[in-house]
Structures are given as C-alpha cells and as structure tokens.
Amino acid sequence: MSGPELTTDTRATPAEGRDHRMQAGFRAMTPVLAAYAPFALVVGTAVASSADPWSAWAGTWLVYGGAAQIAVLDVLAHGSGWVSAAVVGLLINVRLAAYAAAMAPAWRAESARRRVAAAVMLTDAPWAVARDRGRDDPTYFLGAALALFVAWPAMVTAGALVGTRIDAGPVADLLLPLTLGAVVVPQLRRRPAAAAIVAAVITAIATSEADAGTALLVAALTGTATGLAAERAR
Image 1 (cartoon, rainbow, N blue to C red):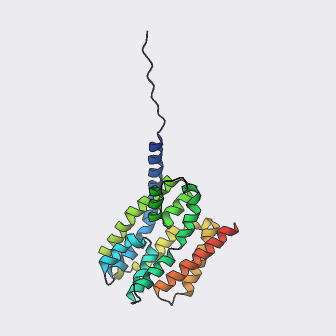
Image 2 (image 1 turned 90 degrees about the vertical axis):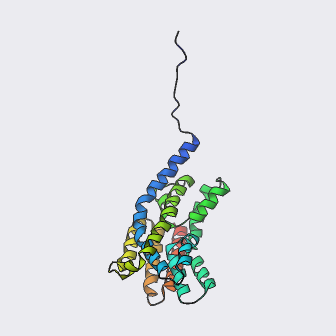
Image 3 (image 1 turned 180 degrees about the horizontal axis):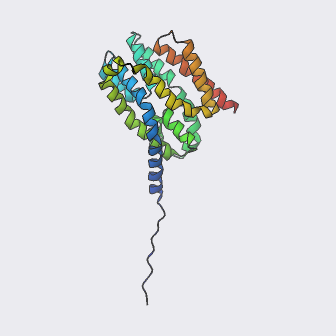
C-alpha cells in the first residue's frame, strides 16, 4: 500500500504576487533613470552653485521635482525670500494634483500608509511609466516610484559633487535637451500629454527673456492647464 501522494502548490501567495508586481515596476523604471540622469546633473550643479549648498541639497527630498527645485533655487538666488520660493515650487508641482486625481479610483482600497507613500513619491516619471504600461496597479506604481525615489537624490548628489566641472564643460548646454528628448518624446503619442508638451514649449520660448524661475512657473502652469483641458475633451 503506497503512502499519501505528496503535491506541491506552486500558486503564488498574495504577498508573493505583490512582490512580483513591485519588482516589475522597479525594473520598468530602470531605463527611465538613464534618461533623467542629465537633468539630475543639472539640478546638482544648481545645488552646488547656490548660496547654501547643504540646504539646497536637502531640498532634493523636500521639493522632489527637478524643475521646481531649480525654480526655487533661482528665486532664492534673486533674493525674493523663502515664501516666494515656496509658492513658486508649489505652483510648478500643482500638476501632481491632476496625476493624483487620475490615480484615485485604483487607490481607494489601499491602506493609508501606502497612499501616503505614493503621495510622497508621486512625480512625472513613475506616473507615466505606470500609465504607459496600462497598469492601474498601486503596487506596480510603488515599485516604479521607489526606483526613482532612491536614484534621483543619488544622481543629484553626484551632480553637486562635480557641478563646477559640468557647468564649465561644453556639454552642459546639452544636458537639458537630452533629458527632454529621452523623457518627452515617448509621451507624444498620448494626445493630452502631447498638447501639454507643445503648450509648455511655446510658453518657454515666449518667456525666454524672463528669469528661469518665472519661465519654468509659467510653462508648467500652461502645460498643466492645456493637458487637463485635452484630457477632459477626450
């Protein structure tokens, strides 16, 4: 008489499934990090050349947005004070409210801890990666967001450490176009994103004579408003 037959259940547990989806999101963000590296070096250069590099570097986590951080540093450099700088940073990052609204339905059942983590790490790249892959999966988004949240400060720090060398080099003027080309071009196939990008570019050209903080602020607000209008018109 043979003994009981042993079987192995290969089905993944819910925890294992979450781990797999988070790893998938993390991996999906990896090539995007290479695209963001030039911009991080530009931000690091701005940090190194600021009046208080340590405070500017700490802002990498507090502001958590390259364009907003550069604008804040520019406002402070012109002596406008921290209140004006904070307002500019908040206005440039107001587009994140639109991202959050788009994500809300998929996050209603998530715990408060996960929602807070998502809010802290929410920015353009992980949102775009999750949307482009057709994933309304909070765990997938968290994996992508975590990759950038770890890598971005490290890349900005590298830029701050070698900032003067980058700023003096002939390649410095190419860093921002390289980043924009790598990050923006894949978004052009989505009509709301394309509309926002075109509006922001036109606005940036129109404000080319203004200081960096004002130009970034106006371009960001115009792009956000145009993108939201295009999204509602779909």
